[in-house]
Length: 404
Ligand SMILES: C[S@@+](CC[C@H](N)C(=O)[O-])C[C@H]1O[C@@H](n2cnc3c(N)ncnc32)[C@H](O)[C@@H]1O
Image (cartoon, rainbow, N blue to C red; front, side, top):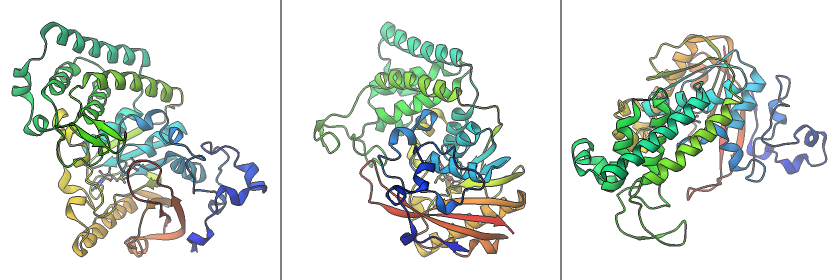
């Protein structure tokens, strides 16, 4: 087993003037990676200027915020290296693996326990008649605006339809606008896209501070000092601005991806990857949840409440709400082990599993051999924290297992 430790990590500067530099001309374009490219020759430690945010969040990758995504270019590299016929992501989250696989003409299967994440993955990878999509997105918006202009804000709709959570986290004006938009959604063929626009708008229209959109603890109803804008800001009371802004952005992003989209099939399964029946596949590219870090349902709670999606949070592996105790870690190792044992039952002979994980507690150390995989390589990648108010740089591992 090769172990590439932190000291072996190369940056682009290390390649300056070498033949490697010529082989890696444009960061963000990895079409030079082939099955014969040694993984150890690929620089994976990108800095912001080498792989800027706009490339990491290109086309549908930024259709909706999602905390816990991995970098699409990382997925692209492993898909080019292992050239699967069908790739599985048993923790597909916001669908990064599925989008990248489809754009390379590779069939893909994604599974996630969160119904919102499955909806998002599906919307990103569905095929659309983009003209029709554009006309539907614009039509529902005009209907919403026309109805507001005609009848004003109807408090009774809010009283009747809003859950206590929604009443707590939105102004009644914003809530009315969103509930009205929601009431029209089912009239349209591309209703799932409209749900994503509504959810993204709801996220922005919550009564929160601008600097804590990821984990707001309590509604912000008064003006506050904003760390992001360095001035006093007010919580918003309007959702229409966001519905309008994200409508246009969604049209733009889906149109952009439709030019890259192939007809390779994409299947999204909503369920617990420990138990779901998986179709056959030859490769896995995935990033599992970490222990005690994120509550994946809770981060999109506004969407569950607005869209009435089924909640399976009790089946989340490693949920933040279960903490990071010895017992939580043991439950996590058991849960993740069960997922990969399920994967082992359906993967083709000699299939490859690529796992991107920040395994600081070495919870994956003995997992492979216990469930019938052999560790072929472990890469270490320096992750530069580029956005938000979250912590500093860290190292993540990329485990490469082969079905033994
Ligand atoms: C690190 S995220 C994956 C993010 C994904 N790579 C992306 O780029 O969007 C881990 C995902 O595992 C999902 N998950 C947690 N427990 C699960 C389970 N038992 N079965 C299937 N998915 C689960 C979470 O809902 C979350 O979306």
